[in-house]
Image (tube, rainbow, N blue to C red):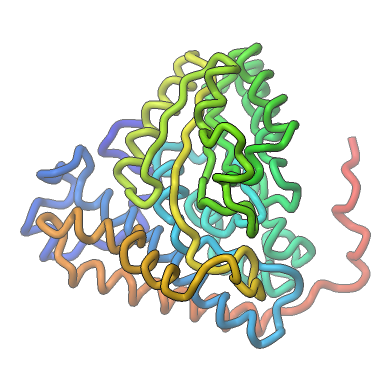
Length: 350
């Protein structure tokens, strides 16, 4: 995919003000991406933020079954990586999967229905927040198994290589999940078979309530890649452009036969590990500081203030809130799954 092409830019709205500044469809003065492309990226990040902020409030009503793990604060990672993928490429997520779903193109209304346990959900209301999947857009699923994504994408990448589909597979794994043995096995197999895989580690500094500086013995998640024989890079996970640049290089390497690689992206989650987490391992002042200095949306605005009018971004934010409001209203009105379907989609038939 060329630097100025995005498979989902059709979702973005480019206003006259932005066209006047740098011209929609042309490269902006500070990046290799068009203004339209950048607006599309901001819209996806804004949608994720609006989605998560609304779920934070909706969860308090007690109407959402199961656990919810919110992605707010890490939006630039999911969007920066997925903007370099094709619809036919695959990703595997974590228990904190809403952002990855939206970045890969999952329908926001069907996602909300799934979280509310309704029949119109992506999993017919049976999976809930931690098990959203949509194979039609290459989303292999959120996953309640810590570190469960890397083995899945290793299989997807092996399929792509075997069938010659030119596909790439990407896993998103937290700093806590990076310590799992099955993750190391997947990394080793990917190198041995030279598979088109990118292992993305989202280091938010806390594996639930345990600091990564304690749980990661080497204090260097990406540094482990060298032991398996693959390249790795660390990036600021709050900077969309930095993430996308790293993703572009890793995806191009994988797609051209160069094998697997690792990206470690650091960003702070704004909410607790799960909804209901007392958050005692962080002070209110720390969280306030994170929101002021580590917000991917604010950082994007600052970096693009000479290229994109703030009014355009404000309009995108407002539209994202409206879209999420509509999705919630639809989900609340949607039908529950019929009890007769309780055993369907439980076992695969071959």
